[in-house]
Length: 168
Image 1 (cartoon, one colour):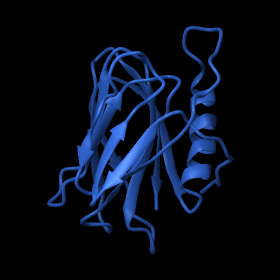
Image 2 (image 1 turned 90 degrees about the horizontal axis):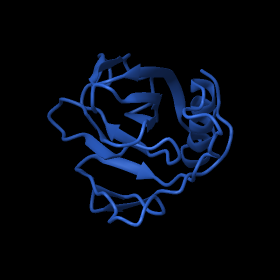
Image 3 (image 1 turned 135 degrees about the vertical axis):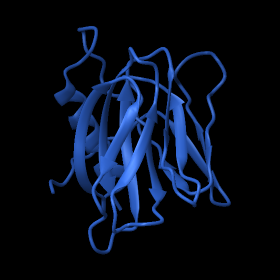
């Protein structure tokens, strides 16, 4: 799998006693959104340069995600990237030997929140407001690393997303 380049994103994340609380800052003058998860970890990233077009090309998002991932999770192994619209379930292949967590880096068109959950015994979920300029990174402990893991992505049916799935 390819390695990643370096960058950072303007989101602050705080992990407390195994509970990750995401506080997105610098987005708007409205209060920061929060999300909790019992078994996820998150890392801060900074804003991607904005494009003069209404929506940057997918390649720009994937490049920025790769840079953010390399900076915040240098031992991560990219699994795949995906562009899509609306909610759905994403199948993630079994974890490689030595990896115990699945993570994602996500951008989506603004105006709604994204949420991801992994249906398993150990709680694994995260979410935040969609943004094209702020890229959250989250990863989750996986109960059954030898099988396919299902990521359940929730967002509006008209929302476009770009995500990179990785192993740690």
